[in-house]
Image 1 (cartoon, protein in one colour):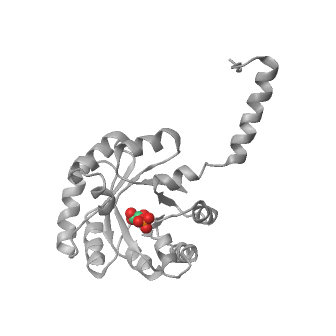
Image 2 (cartoon, helix red, strand yellow):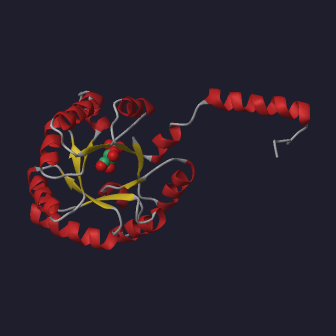
Image 3 (cartoon, helix red, strand yellow):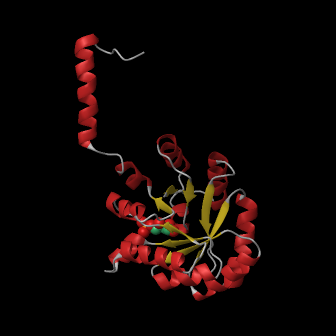
Length: 223
Ligand code: E4P
């Protein structure tokens, strides 16, 4: 399962890239507004940092198909590289996806709350669908099960579309999806940091250092 950062602040993205095995960045309109910067300033600086090969996903604002299609063309041109245009999975969104797919756009169908939306987006030509795990669970449904159902639909119908699971609140949610072989997960930096936080691990590592230094001297290493 590819791990992707769901954020737009370049310094925070750099901090995660330095330590974690991540493969790209996703944003949404709300995340971009939190930077306090102009959208293309944000997206082009992320692109410059992650390089042309890495995935960068950004969302259109228009809610009608024609507007989405026009925005997608401008976004792909301005952001460049391995760009995925995020299109909300509405009726207008499906129309936009069909047209954009014909023109060779890489599409991430977003705002997916149900398996049937995912199926329709895949048929319309989306490369990824992004089900919102935590938000689905907040509505009282089983988010992990919904995503596993989507995976089954894609496999049983021999669809090439992949899942980019989104909206995580904890490590357990991520683990369940990794077990099921979900292609990618986009996760906020605070949740990524928590994936490796474990007092028992720190304790074990510190005990090795204390034992070694007690015998060979303070600050000694294998150098
Ligand atoms: C996905 O496209 C969204 O950007 C995001 O993952 C939603 O996460 P949230 O539910 O934590 O806002």
